[in-house]
Length: 525
Image (cartoon, rainbow, N blue to C red; front, side):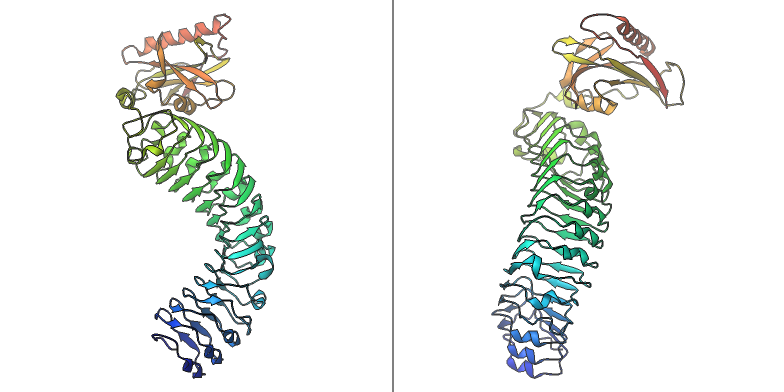
């Protein structure tokens, strides 16, 4: 094995007929590759990578019938690949990436079934990719990214059963994705980004249970995101950005529990952000920007403690953000611009150090940062509810200045003990609130989210035995929520009076009041 040269490779090296391996990588070699290397008929490995070699690859290298490894990457080589590469049928490793190679792939490589690893990326190679490559039973890795290949993705890739990495990014590939790719179940990475792919992502991709990285960004893919794809348990990186995907984000995305990177930006995704995103506790980067998403940010987002970068900009999202993000100290970059968010921004590094562009387009936000109106400090400092206190909630529709009580109000009394069949007014241990049904189920979390945990900016007034807050539900309905604060001294009295008030409302008849049908259930914990 020859391991050290400077300057040009001498022609005389072709006289070393007994040579089995030639290693001249990273030697600052210049000039052309001598054609005399074709005389080394016993040569099994040729390493000339990471030099300054120029000119074309000699056709004589196709005469090396015993060659198993050919690595010529990271040089300044031009011209086309030798026509007789893999003439001996033994070539396993072909690496010619990061050069200036042109022309098409030699026909000899189509039937080179010995190939295990192929790297052709960062050249100017061309040709119809659907006709250039065959079936390779031993192939593990192939990268053809950033060339000038055209045509469609061949179904043959689904027959390469040992293939773990398929990279064809940055070419002129069109047509649809073949479902047969789902048969190559050893895939760990598929990168087909920066092409012109059309149609839907086949649900058969859901069979790729070993898949770690799927990048289909910057294509023209359309339709709904298949639940089978976003529920792959081993998936760590998913990039479907810059396509034409529509409808909602599947709730099944919560099953991709190992996701670290998720980018669904620049699509036409609509409806609410699924709360199941909160199950992705390892997620460090999330980009849902430039879509048609609506509703509020799910409260489950506060479970994303690994999140470092978040972009929700250019959607139709609304509601408060303070409670959701105030404890997410690991978040470093955030962009919530061009939505309909309201209220104070959290006092965390990501929000306090963000540029004004990260907040613009939200008329309801406030905070002590550039570009926002300052908040009333009382709104920020005030606790949402007293610790250890007892709270009653009553929810009713709000139409202008007229308050209409809901059709069905179901009120729950929670106690930190066991189930008991009757109302028991034990001091200091009861947390009482209501869950109400109005045009669909409303949970306690929904109420807390809609009122910003009873933030003062939604305060309407006070009456009877509690304060009233205006809240816009995800359904679009505007309701009023009445909350009763109790003290240790007056708790039992206030609670009885409050229940009497509810009881009266169930019996009153008025054209503007729809009476409550159900009153109190007891649930003790």
